[in-house]
Amino acid sequence: MVNNRTSEATTTAVSSNGSPPKACAGCGGKIADRFLLYSMERYWHTCCLKCSCCQAQLGEIGTSCYTKRGMILCRNDYIRLFGSSGACSAC
Image 1: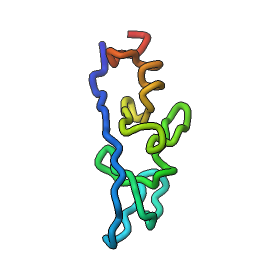
Image 2 (image 1 turned 90 degrees about the vertical axis):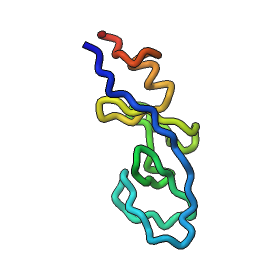
Image 3 (image 1 turned 135 degrees about the vertical axis):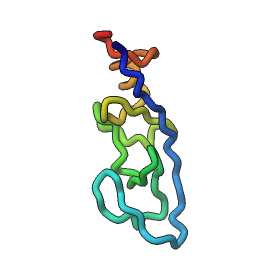
Image 4 (image 1 turned 45 degrees about the vertical axis):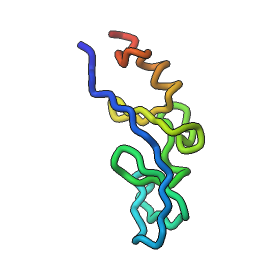
C-alpha cells in the first residue's frame, strides 16, 4: 500500500517587522532575527529548518521542502527515498 500523505511545502522568508517574536519549530527558541522562515504552518530560524537526511539548511538551497513520514526533506533526498511518484522504493 502506498502512503499518499506527502506534502510539498513552500519555504518563505518573512520579515519580522516589529511583531512579537515567534517560537522556532526546530529549537523552540524565540526568533529575533530580521528574517525567519515560514513552512508547514510553522516558523523557523533560517538555521533550524534542515533536511532530515543530509542536514542541508533548506532556506539556503531552495524555496521548497518536502515532508513525509515525519521527515522534512530537500528535493534530492525526497526523490532518492521515494522517487518521483512519492512511493517508497520498497513499494
